[in-house]
Length: 317
Figure 1 (cartoon, rainbow, N blue to C red):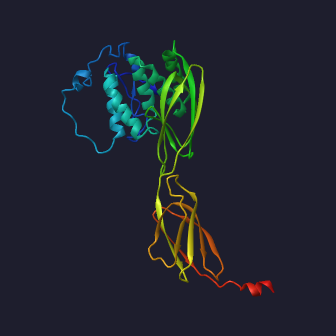
Figure 2 (cartoon, rainbow, N blue to C red):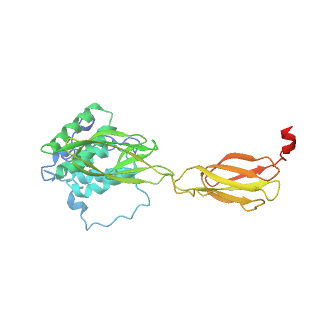
């Protein structure tokens, strides 16, 4: 890695960068060069060896929320001691809870998979790391290590955008972007699962096949969730016909049925959020129309004052 990761090892197993503000994405880095081809530590007498973290150790109480700093430190200690497989779920928790704050976790987990010979995941994680890392030296190190995994492999490129544009995108469970598209991500050929999520929208998952030498482009459009508000129409005259016609609903799941009622009606109507056209007619009165927008969990009230129409005999004079 670049200079900030090349600090002396402690008993040949751990490399500490710094603990910055207790929540930095540089809290600790792992010197993976100390692991042999089988993913084992060449020499270690530290208390964080694999034996000291055996499955027979007391189980720690479950945390109500993910402590990213704890999980990152735990993952690095396990990986440094040769416990690559046991480090994986801890790195995944970090990337689930705080991927933007712990960009280093992408690289470390990629290194774990590379040492385990699982290059599909390693190449994906190296690519995501390089999309987020700003230091060119660190990006160069990731690219160099990724190249060792690409030897003899067929590859393609994947580009994905989402609507709305503030949606987050995950690939095979790893955060790929938040609020922007990702373009030309180099991947080992195969099928990948892309999930798009956005507030107040239904999430969508698509499976995309990345073929050898292909450049796959996809846009995922999310559908808004179905929310409701209420509408109360108060008309100054009885027996008027009130027509409420949906025009542009926020969700496709909203009813497109036109509602027609006679005044007066006391109870407000429950309607899907979106734009409606309201028309009120009564013989001998001017037609009343208006466009309204139903907001989520809000009550809208329309007060209609019908006025007498000009008699036809007068209009013809």
